[in-house]
View 1: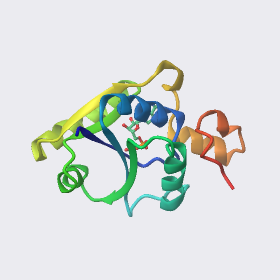
View 2: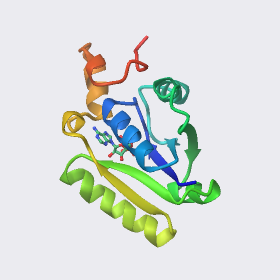
View 3: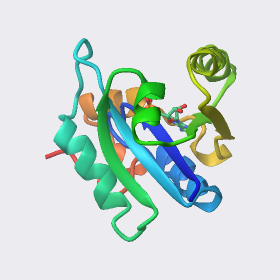
View 4: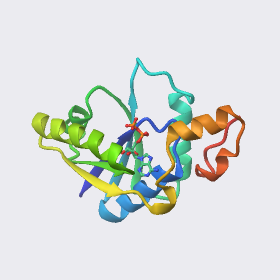
Length: 151
Ligand code: ADP
């Protein structure tokens, strides 16, 4: 069974993430969406909210699992025996950043990183822009799946 880990902050889940997860499902038997816990970072949505948004968005898709983890992503992959990391690429800045991380991960482990290029219609979406729109009372609903709603 081919499994891939899709790690990120998902603060919150966006239509860009949904696109990568759906396309990952076509390539892998299981896509494990892994919310990284970083004690030094402050988030707009709690861990529970971020997890619920993803679970609700994929409740009809048994190939998608949602977990949380702390520490190094490759260490977590080793612990749960997942040989692939899935990441999305939007632009040259993403590429440079992801290249350094993927090379480091290859030095630290045998885990292979698989990149999917973002779909044109979601390439401009980022969680930080969504948070900005929410803070400024804009219509964020066009950027996120229906499961993501601010109370
Ligand atoms: P991180 O804090 O690790 O960057 P994110 O939740 O922002 O976590 O992103 C997780 C993954 O989703 C990354 O691989 C990122 O490149 C990808 N991603 C984010 N937004 C998009 C998008 N609009 N299209 C494609 N991939 C995306």
